[in-house]
Each structure stands twice: as structure tokens, then as C-alpha cells.
Length: 252
Image (cartoon, rainbow, N blue to C red; front, side):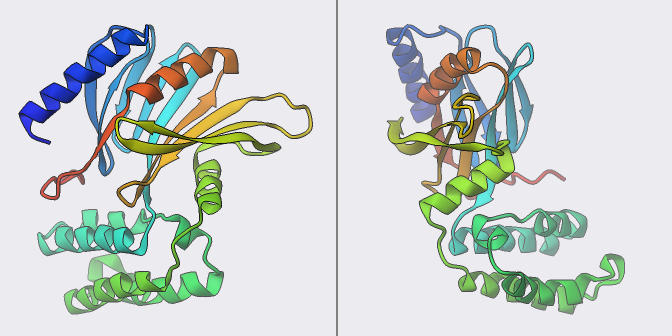
């Protein structure tokens, strides 16, 4: 995003926030994994930047904004190609760690046989990471990248299940309602949840995957009546732009 565009977007966010009657705090910008995110912090809440996980707290109440990784085969391949780039720069440890942390709904819900087939070339090459041969590592990276073609695009239901498994305590909860919401030009899917037995335990989760990477806003803990206004105001303020192609988001 150009500096002038960023300034204009920030001004628009502040204006929109003021018209909506929310907090008049300054616009903050963070890198959430693959996403550059601007937001207005709800009044009284604390923001903690953990990179791919952004925490928002008020006492014991907590919301999270989380990059949950690549959704499509194309973005899985892009992630692996980035890891290969780190390896070519001599950052073997960072590259191996990035491969180890690869996560995707397509990969998680694949059969054990599919997962084993996908990982076999890599595991065979780096079973002893320190002694791994460079030629074999290069071949293994190429095999992983080719292997992403075997995964089908996940359905919206599978994406929600993935969000729930990674960011929610989904035990006993079911979807009470679902809706699509456009925020700053991006489509978010918002689910309202409740406990299927007691019809209590309300919670909400919002996620989008416009750029092939899944970003989720979740209610982690706290009373729904306290969480809901902050969740809604934070979601309404989110402006998400893709990570610039030349940005190195994996620290040395």
C-alpha cells in the first residue's frame, strides 16, 4: 500500500468510526502473518502483538485475530516457495521451521494416506536436519510444491470447521446463524454460535480468505455481553491488505 493510500485509508477509518459512535482511538497497523491489517482498538481494550496472533484483552476477556495459513493449493505452494527462498539464502533453520509449521485445511483434513504421501519426500530428505544433503533438500522442496496440486479447495463448511478446531473451543457448540458481511471491501463470513444442549454459551467467529490465506477474528474467553460489542466494533474497523510480495515476514 502506498503511503498516500495508507493515509487516506486511515482517515476514512477514523471518520467511519466516529460516525458509528465507536471509540475515537488512533488507527493501528500490524502485520498478521500474510496480512497487513489496520484497525481501531475498542476503548479500554489492550492490544498485544504476537505476529501471526494478535490479542485484544480487557481484564479476563480476550479476542484474537489470527492468520490460520494458506487455504488454496496455490497459496500452499507459495508458502513453501518462500521457505525454499529462505533456505537458498542460507537460513536453513528458518526454512525448516516454516515448513514444519505449514498448516492448511486441505492438508489437515486429508486422509492419513494423502498426508503421508505429501510429506514423504521431505521426511526422507531431512530426517537428520543438520546432516541433510543440499541436493536432496532442493529436490524435497520441489516435491512438496508439486504435491500441493493433489489437494482440493476446501468448502466453506470445512473452512469454518478449521477455524473452530484451531481457534475456538467448539465442544458442544453449533451454528445459530451465519451471515456475510462486507468490511472495507472484503467479504467476511460471520457465525454466531451457541451450546446445542443448553442454548447458552454464545460466541461469534468471523473469517475471510480473499487472498488465499485464512484470517479469523474469534472470541476466546469472557462473557458474551462484554465480548460482543468489542468484537463487532473491531470487525467493523478492520482493513486488510495482502502482504507485499517483497516483504520478509519470517524473522531472522
